[in-house]
Amino acid sequence: MLDGCTPWPEDVARRYREQGVWRGDTLGTVLRDCARRYGDKPALVHGDRRIGYAELDRWADRLAAGFAAHGVRPGDRVVVQLPNVPEFVAIAFGLMRLGAKLVFSLPAHRASEITHLVELSGAVGYVVPETHRGFDHRELARQVQAATGTLDSLFVLGDKAEGFVSVAELEAAAGEAKPLPEPDPTDVAFFLLSGGTTALPKLIPRTHDDYVHMSDRAAQVCELTEEDVYLAVLPIEFNFAFGCPGVVGTFQTGGTVILADTPNPADCFPLIERHGATVTAMVPSIMALWLDDAEWTDADLSSLRLVQVGGARMPREFTERIQPTLGARLQQVFGMAEGLLTFSRPDDPDDSVLTTQGKAVSEGDEIRIVGEDGAELPAGEIGELLTRGPYTLRGYYRVPEYNKRAFTEDGFYRTGDLALLTADGDLVIAGRIKEMIIRGGDKISAGEVEDLLLAHPAVAAVAVIGVPDEFLGERICAYLVADGAEVPLAELKRSVHARGVADYKLPDAVRYLPELPLTPLGKVDKKALAAHAASEQEG
Ligand code: OOB
View (cartoon, rainbow, N blue to C red):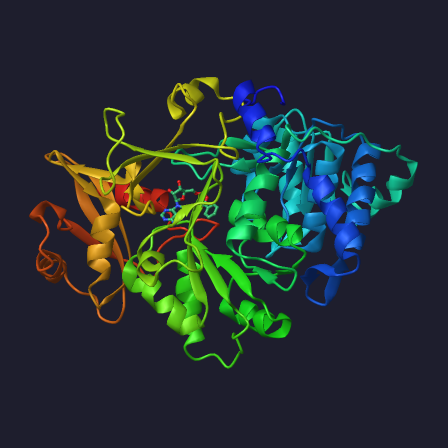
């Protein structure tokens, strides 16, 4: 495995191989097999473009050879920052075929994040669009190249520009290259970014073996077949949309991926109707937009059979609206770029689909819920979620000191999430350890207070954070989006109190916002809220 990564212990790796959990396939061979099996069947659709499996396979080969001809070697790191376009998929598979390691960044990332990613990964290449949503990525690329020491090549999707190799030039250079050796399936295919609670992301090495297994299991749990049409709503460099089952899992079952430019219902509903999309995946904040529009749209959404929602907490009031409004089965998803994925199953009882995040997708996944002393807790009790398994990392890239804290001695990853297991073995996420508010010694889960506030009819959206307080240590500050008139703090307190909870959980302060700040992936940005609260305190 690439230097700076932590491999699975040899005996564990051998067991996964013997059990067939790790198949010894690379993502490149997965695409090759698909090309053989599905030929001209469309793998990808974007606007009026349709790219068949065999065509995508040849395209990835040309790009692999083109990158090699332009000096990218096996083991090199390349930062890729592209929107949901077919080139993204072809470039990703091309780089993986070459054995280069992609670093997936998001189109919304700017100089601070990209500089950090280049420095941490030692990337030699950076792939950008010319412009995206009015932002000039070439300028960003030049800036990052000047600020860092390793970026030998900048690649641009679009016209040739000074200092850049265009994707067309890459393809043209392909003819000169020699055949490439097959990468090692146990080695890193790409790096995902940690969502993390620290300021800048850490790099998560994902191997071919681990990712092929995870996306294959995700596709099986979703019962995907060749008939399925997966609508990629989220940016496809997000693990959820890339492999849970996302692009890779849909490919593995011979379905078709439709690439959406934005997650907005105005863009996505016509795509569902036009292509008969059957499956899609999104975070709760986007689902909220879809639910509002689905109530009055003329678009025919009847082809949808499964909607995956995950990435952030959802109260029952919210999950209950999904199936009746969209006419599709809800699948709750708990996932993380680090690995572990849990899904509710299509045939689970309604009550469990509405209130739990289901079970792990692989039989090799191990889950432990532990108390503060590290001892395992019985079903029903909330503790920290620890996990290890065939697709959960054993260490972040190049941060040995951090890794000592993030993993137990026997290789379990400390997720930082608070969760419980029901008597049936379903996982229920209760919040994040870091989002525990300690108010005068009482421990309060931000998520619980959010659910209590959301039950008030005048509250459309809510995020609760702890803010520093001289006497209490922290106090509870609720950021609300009003549904109609703004309700004063005293009434909110009465409403929470009336639900029969301890008084120390009542919000201490309330701030109304026109909307909650979101991260590029659509999760509530609590760091931005904390900064807002801090600036208010200073002011
Ligand atoms: C997904 O991945 P990340 O890496 O962006 O974020 C992971 C974190 C988890 O540790 C947890 O704190 C939170 O996001 N989370 C959830 C959740 N799913 C993820 N919190 C509550 N309920 C859920 N259902 O977000 C991700 C990756 C793959 C698939 C789906 C989501």
